[in-house]
Length: 251
Image (cartoon, rainbow, N blue to C red; front, top):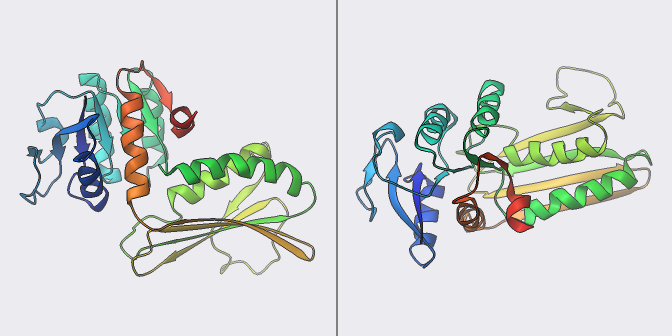
């Protein structure tokens, strides 16, 4: 039985994961961390991670960027592996994640779904063929109206996967409203849509002369992310220090 601390337990993803874990015999949430306790959890809830004194095999994090620094310090001090799912981290925080991974196991992924992680692989193959043929690359992501960061961490991960295949020669363009000029070949455009209750839509568009190829992923429930995070926690428990991602989990 893998014992887990749910960091951000009362958020939408925290509650989704709590529900999924309740019916999984291989994993158990032994404590939660959240600034607000809804009083409905079957485990103790602490206002901050530094107040948590419950032993665990791993931490699943779906919180806010502001809470990640303290979480990383806690993981290193307690030597508890962490599945880090919070997006919108600063460059300084990303550097801290890398530093922490030298001392404890960290699995970081902008998106925990199996479909997205398969898409990351497929995009490399498509890019190798289409980019040299002159296809322009654009990414459009859509999320619910409560999401605060843009573009999404998943959109950036998709762009990074493409750019790695292109020797990181392409630049990212987020807003064309301030510049009146045609797009250059070596750029990846990213557009963000926020509205309603959209769980997560991502389209990667390869636009060539007289033809367009679009890779699309639609998430219809947050459960797809929760299931991936749970599998990641099971995988990460007991692993040595290092930086891991979902490709390690899915093989």
